[in-house]
Amino acid sequence: MNDQIAAIFFKHGITEVGFCGFDTVRDHLLDCRAKKRIPEGAKSILLCLFPYKVKEQKPKNISRYAAVPDYHGVCGAKLSEVAKALQKNFPSAQFAWFIDNSPIPEVAAAVCAGLGVRGENGLLIHPRYGSWCFIGEIVTDLPLDCQNDPKPCLQCGLCKKTCPKQLDKTRCLSAVTQKKGDLTEQEAADLRRHGLLWGCDLCSENCPMNKKAEKTDIPAFISGYRDEYILGENIENRAYAWRGEAPVRRNAELQKK
Image 1: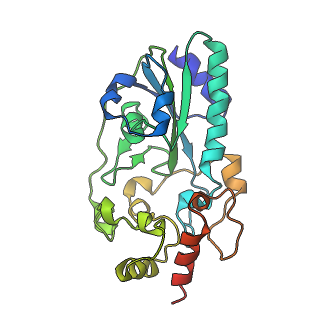
Image 2: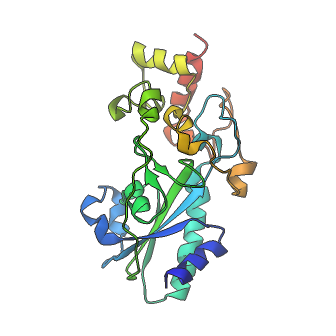
Image 3: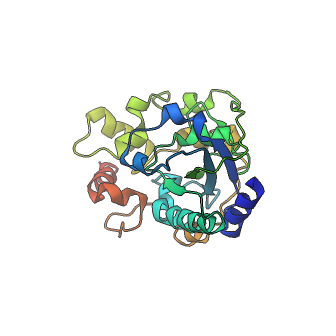
């Protein structure tokens, strides 16, 4: 059955697929509104990856994930198509797809599904695409053969050494770029120092497991790529649109000071 399901993903252009038992994460579900969409009697999680690295050179002032069109729409459309195809092939089963706003602890589930290792920075690192991947999942009540053999990364410590905040999530610069309202003097200085307008890839850019990461072949990401935010641009369908333009505009203005 696993091969049959993987073939459906492949048919829709999704090649990196894995399977995780729902019981593996049942006690670690995230508390969000989407939690109520989990099928009753859930038994398995179908994990898949959407690589988003478009160029070798990093973007100028935004994170790689923000340089491509908003992934919620791109990946969500694909997952919706796959879920419908799965429903057609397994009419008595239930399928619920999630992307980002998910009750599933995505990295833990993806690692258990054999899709990569967990970096010291908490990110999934795939052997082909590195940490430049969005994770999607479909929860089902189908009982499947699942892989549960988590592995560590190289644990070289470079991500922590590179991070200005030593991977302290309470001070993460990516979170600072998304903060509404006024920034502290230290926060503003940090963003100016590193030229950050939205997101932060410092730990990932210096990860040795990312050095040979392959580029994406997803057409929507390639055609809609932008390597910088420019004041006054149309932010529709961009990762920073959900916060409104104020935070990213504020961060852009900071770079002029």
